[in-house]
Amino acid sequence: MKTEAQTINNIGTKNSKWKLFLKSEFFYNYKRSVLAIIGSIIIISVILIAIFGPLFTIQDPYNMSEIELNNAYTPPAWIEGGESTFILGTDQQGRDMFSAIVYGSRVSLVIGIVSTLLSSVLGIALGIISGYFGGKVDALIMRIADVMLSFPTMLIALFVMSVLGRGVVNILITLTIVGWVKFARTVRGEVLSVKKQEYIEATKVIGLPNLKIILKHVFPNVLTSIIVLVTMQVGSNILTEATLSFLGLGVPITRPSLGMLCSNGFDVLYSGMWWVTIFPGLYIMLIVFGINLLGDFLRDELNPKLK
Image (cartoon, helix red, strand yellow):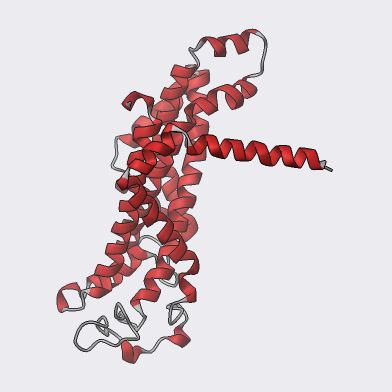
């Protein structure tokens, strides 16, 4: 059991760290960066809408008992023929587009975040092994990476999805397969630079095991590059998933993502029912735009080579 003094000491330590962060150059530059603040607001808003949005939607768009086919292709509320109930109109099945976008954003965000975490874990592990140990292991991993980089990412994703079939799990596997290369190559380059430092050589001389050296001395020094890459990769994976779903190789129809919603409305895009595909597409653009704004700031601030 922690004593009262220890608890107070821990709270004081956390407060001091927080005060140091508020006084740091990073936070100072963040407050002065309008684009980074806008990006943060967009990302936080999108996450909050995905979490709490269903509390304010008029229907569960994937519960067929709540959908009426008579409401199919109802225009947005501000257009002639629209209804105030359906702010952004409805699709071919009578689903409220606002509700569909809220629920669809959940799927897109989960896939984007989870696939990025999976690909980063795999890529970081392979990058550290490749850069730290070198030799034949390094050559093998980098040759595999070179082969994958010789083909367009979307082509590899289309091939893997055509083999595995549609499904959330399959698309996570696909995005992990196509995404680990960026992390592996970036981390390998950082590790090659870090392991030449004198303090790393000193830890080897005193007999520290390789695993401990990697976890305590190598990994912390490549963490900033990983944070930047993770941020940018989330937006890239959301776009890749949207493209695959648009092409009919993504998530199942029963739980469509934003990309699937765009695909559903594409056939009637030039027939006057533009809202079915335009609104989900704009929301994808907004999400990726916010992520890229924050990612650009993190890249500039956390990469010492750009200072």
